[in-house]
Structure formats: structure tokens, C-alpha cells
Amino acid sequence: MKKILSFIFLLSVVQVYGQEKLDLGEKAPAINISEWIANVPENKDLDNKFKVLEFWTTWCGPCLGAVPHMNELVKEFGDEILFLSITNESSEKVNRTLKRMEFLSTVVTDQTSYTQQEYGDGKSEYTVLPMTVLIDDKNIIKWIGQPQMLDRDILESLLDGSIEERNAFKNSVEEEYDDVLAFAKKVKRLKDSGMNYYLELKKVENSMNNITMNSSSLYINSNASIKSLFSELLGTYPRFIEVPEEYETQQFEIIYKNKYPSIDFETHFLIDATNRLNLKWEKEEIITEGYQLSIKDKSKLEKTLDDAGNGRSDIFNASINKVTGVNYTSYSLKELTIDLSKTTRYLISYESNDIDKYDFTIETGSIADIKKSLEYYGITIELGDVKSVKNIFTKL
Image 1 (cartoon, rainbow, N blue to C red):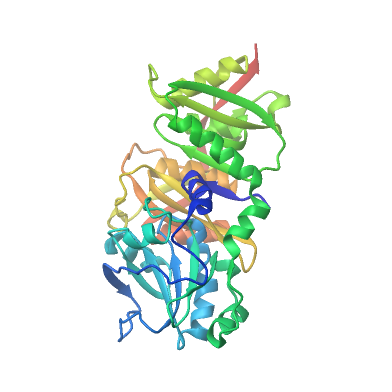
Image 2: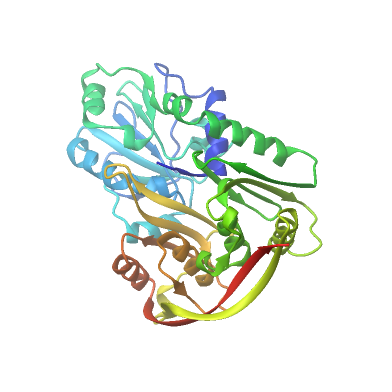
């Protein structure tokens, strides 16, 4: 199964090999809590308690995908073990997520990022996400891994003292992500270098885990089609992109860095890519069937609290081995409809010029799920004719 990984996650994976704070069998670093947000226990003393410490954020799709699994464990072991879900975000941002998704664990925040640093590499505010640490009643670290790896047998062995000390996350990374780690290190070297311009369009097999990043001067994708790249750069739907037959199924490793483009980044990138591939670009106006998005109750739309740039993350539910939705951070409605159309293959259009940015959590199992999720934000979609432009790329 292809996994979607953000660059921050990849850098965190690279850092896991340099971690000095988390030593199995040693005392756990202190846990700092700025604010107790949900399911607050009467006794807030963390000493002499078995603890499941889970690091998460509101923008991390895999973190949200693990919530149903963790809730089941809380139901079974919550009387004997304290389940702490810790983020470094504001309580306002966390509460927005809690309105949409039920957490049975105790939800807390450390806005100083002290805990994230202590359980990370000691320097960065980021740790591996999602990451779970099991700590016994003597405050000794017994197990490190991803939440979906945690099961009732492991928790029972934690309680009776027979648990096998293990860094399950590190073992998994070593086994599954060798190619990912190599790619992440390559990109990090380029990102940190003094090089101002770089473009690579390298043909690859469709097998590597998909790593993506898009910032104001750097774009990377370890395994993407030219059609999906052009769709992203043009801000339109993949079905409205036509490319030469040889590029229909071919995947590319794409790395583009340009610190000083003469025009906006996406346009400059598109021109450079079409020139490199020796393509001509033409447009054709069309009308097709699709869903038209409209706002029915704008009071339900809350502007994003994140000004660090937009991002998306698939919500993967490990218990059913399926992506059940997408978490969007700082997306405009136009950007939302384009990505939903790419993700679900339902054509969803929005024609207004609203440039405000919002956060969304959208279930994507069916068009009914999408409609229900959008209704929460005061948005409706209706089937009808949609005007658009087909972008045709041909060989020169």
C-alpha cells in the first residue's frame, strides 16, 4: 500500500536515529502540560501511574486516523492506565477538532514544546508523528511505536511487568522506509544548501512511498505523474489536464527549488517543467457534469488559526486498513474542491473568488460522506453542469 508522508514527518524519521532522550529501560523525560483540555482526571499527578503518552497534532491525518483504535484501548484499560494525547497547539485549535472527533483519552497541550523536544531530539519542537510511548508506574520507558502498533497484549504486559522493551517504530522504519529515508536526506541536503535553482524530473517506478512538500521556494514529490503535477500548479482538476500518452502512467521524482523566481512560483515552475519536457500548452473551454459547491451558512466557517502555510494529510484507519478522509489545514474553498476532486474523483467546483483560508476534516468514503462533512461547515454541493477549461499539453 502506498503511504503519503509529509516532509516534516520524514525529517522526524531521520531524527529518530539521533534521538538521545528516549532510552528504553531508562527514566522518562518530564511531561510538561500547559493546559488540560478534555477528559481531565480528578488527580492530575502523573507520578506512580502507568501512562500511554501519545503525540499528535490537529493537522496530522494519521494521528486522527488512529483515534478510533486508541478509543477502544481507553475503554478497556482506562481505569488502570492514564492515556495522554499531547499536542503543542492552542486549546482553541484543539477544541475545533474535538467538536468533529471524539477523543476518550485525556487531551492536553504543551505550548512551550518542552515535552515535544524532550521526547524528540532535544532540540526540535517536532517529534515523530504519530508516536506513542509507554511508561510504567516507576516512570521507566518500556515501549515506543506508532499508535496502530499498540494492542491489548502489549498493554496487559505493561501492567503485569512482563513487557518486552522495544522501539517498535524504529524497527518499522528500518524495515519499510530505507528508500524514503534516502530520499528525505537527499532533499534535506538540497534544502539546506546555498543553491538557488534546481529542477529534476526523473522517471521512477510506481513503488516508492509518496513524499510531498510544497513551500514558497521548494517543491518535492517522490512519485507523481505529470498530469497530477500540472493539475496542482494550475489549480485545476486532473480530468481537465491532457498530456502525451507516454506520460499518462509514467511516474516522476520531482524536485524543484527556485529561491528567486521572476514571477510567481507555480507559474515559473510550470513553464520550466513544460520546457524541460518539450511540451506545448493550449486551452479549451468545456462544460461537464459535476457538483457545484455553495455556502449556505458562512457563520459555520471558521478561518484557519494556522498562518504557517497550507497542508493536507490523509486520515488512515489502521484497524480497517483504509483511508477514511482528509484533514486540510489553511485551505481556501477553491483549493479544497480541487483536492477533493483529485482525491475522490468526484468533480466538485467552486466559482467564487473567496480567498479566505479555513481548516476542514472531510470524510471521503462516498459522495454522501462528503456532503455530510461539508454540511458541518455550512456548505452544500449540488449536481449540475460545471464550466471549466481543459489544458492540453502536446509534444513540440
